[in-house]
Image 1: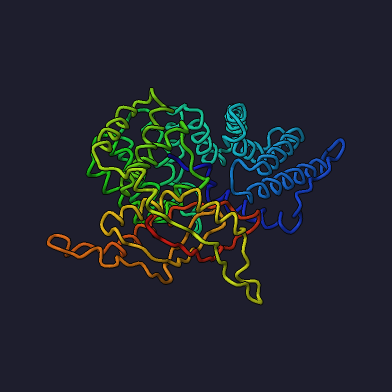
Image 2: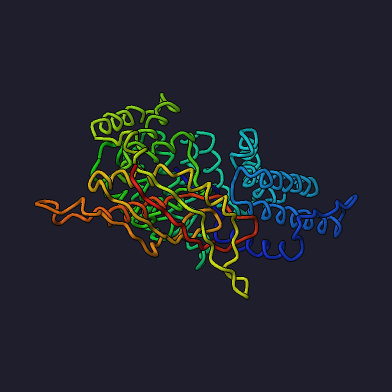
Length: 459
């Protein structure tokens, strides 16, 4: 698991400024006309207009948060074409060449684009006589080489970027420690793919120590995977616990900024997470899918070990899941106020569909509760806050009537256990926190606030 292309401090601040300009001057993504026969001042003006229009299109593309969104791909391709025109005007413009390499580095554009991205970045390196773009070029080359599975070359580029980082400008928004941690984590992923687990563990550990912000959960998760594959089970559990404590909803992990090489490696992560959360059936499905997608992976034997261990655990039979009847009512959105607050950005059907897709998680929570209290039943009203990407920011029970109805009394060793109703609530909160809904419309940066009524009744 690694992060997608990340701008350096200089690139991010520059990009942010142009993004704001693009919103004001080019909200619909219109491109600049090409001026005929540019020379002197006309050439400079044409080059600037082409680059400005390309940036505007590219940032319009990024408003579509799903990386495979057709409009996002279309706008990105248009932006790339404008940069090509800019480079016809001035072939040695390093800035335009670096942007071209970065924008073509997205896997959704296909392998040919990734291969061309390497050529563009290498050409930028040759044209960059002062070395002012060396850090950005090395960082981006590491990413695109990883996408192509050329891990040894990728690590060399990441290491080159790490050596250059102390000379890069720092900022409050994108501090050097965050960039350092991302480079360490990305290179750790490449080293793990090469089977160099000792080095991978060291780098993930450094990344987690350096970056205690939002991305810290990702570094800890990568560390948990590396420890697990190295047979250090207890340390893997500890790292995974830190990751889940920092990011209970796995927002960073589920984001489109995260990529896997090969893509099937995601199922190993899913399996280890599900296993840690006590979701045996989901863990088994994920590890099986990993072994199916990547049968020749050096980590396929470890995945099969997990499957053997999970087989020994008592699962939840289908009959018990069917008995655990869970009914989710229509979502209720917060009322819109006079200032525009509370405006919803998804339909009731989109929320309901997202819940239906993960209904098995709710049934499993209820089935586990029924094992301890066969008459456990009642209603729950739970509030959710969903961010623009579709991740759940907050899960808060508002009120409930869940009761064991006398079917459970603590005895002996159960005296210190959580009552089944309270345990069900905790399980539901954890499950709902990991739900993922469709992203909201392009350009929206507001959250959705809603309440879900849920009814539990055994059959």
